[in-house]
Image 1 (cartoon, helix red, strand yellow):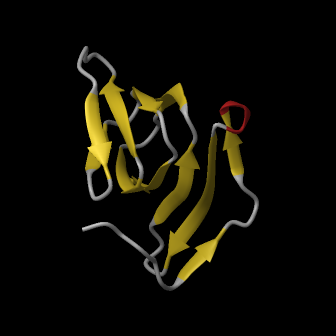
Image 2 (cartoon, helix red, strand yellow):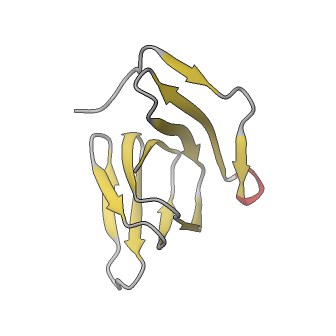
Length: 105
């Protein structure tokens, strides 16, 4: 199921802007203290590095991703999630806007 809204959050109003505006997100903190970002990746092929483990949840659009050490591109569309280990990286290929929630930890 695709997350359509998140209640009872604190939002960081200043956007995180990466890759010359190809990725824009806002940080949110849930009532239980857990953190997420919600954002959009515009058409591009980008490489993201991770500190903590991440779960990328697609809420609209689609992408293809490739985890570090893998040769395979995998499609992710609305309702799909993929996990990225901590201290790693992933490539993402987007042809139409990819809207996501990034879950940390």
